[in-house]
Structure formats: C-alpha cells, structure tokens
Image (tube, rainbow, N blue to C red; front, side):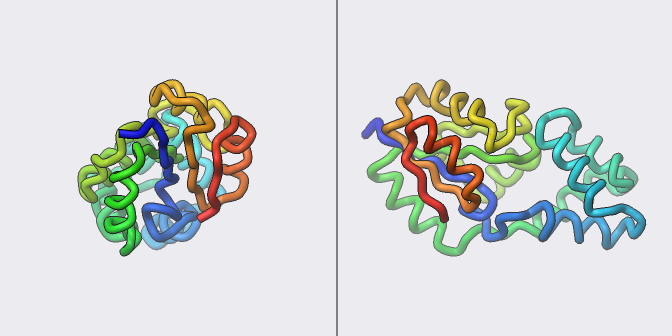
Length: 178
C-alpha cells in the first residue's frame, strides 16, 4: 500500500449538497419552528460542530428537543444524499491511495452517516466536532497529518470550497476544488 493519501471533505464531495447547513438544515428546522432565524440556526450549528454542544443540545437550542431523537434521524435519513458516483470512484482510489476525511460536522451526525453509508473505507477521519477545530483553521489539517503520520506532500485534499483549500495548500498538500 502506498503512503500517498486522498483526503476528502464530506459535504459537497461525498454528499451532494455542499452547504448542508443553509440548504438543508435551516429549511428543515424553520419548517418546524417558524420564529427562528437562519442566523440563529447557523450560530447554534457552528457551536455544535465545534463540539461545544451535543446533538441533543443542538435540537434543544433550536426548539425541537421534544422531538429528539426522532427528529435527528429524520434529518439525517431524509436530507443528505450521497453522490451517486461516489462508490465507484472511491473504490478505484482505494486501490492506489490511503483515504481520509476532514469535515466540519457534529461528531454524532458523522458517526451516524459513516455507519449508514458504509464509509469505513476512510482510514483517518477528522471531524470538527471531535477535535474542536473547523476548516479552514490550519490546525485541523495538521491534526490529520499527525494522525495519519504523513507529510503534506503525500496528500491531495479535495474540497468544494476554495477557502478550505488554501490552508491545506499552504501546508504543502496538493489541493483540488471539487
């Protein structure tokens, strides 16, 4: 096996929608809680994606704790769609590279999606909610390099947002905008 890595972002690369917070989560919550603003939902999600709130606390803060845990399952099962080409592409990449993920998400949500979509193919997974750091903070990429025990020049990082590619590139990773 090679010591070269392909590292993917989850939302917008593995999953179809890139801005899952504004395109999926905000409308999902606002459909059920009419008096909550987009800004408030984003602020609460940001805190949860840094590990400052559990997923249950997230639902409480947006006013839906009385529907927990069913509301969480409904959101994760019905809102997020894996890219239809992902399975074929990732299996080909796995023949030549080690695979990793760096994603901004709640710990529990990513664990659920990892199990649901059989994403065990990724050997090193860094989720912002687990480490308390979000992209584009350079520390999240450094954390990946440390856990994978790899030098930046042996990594290609794929993300759908340019702002997340710059720090990876500055560290010496090759980058691809998806």
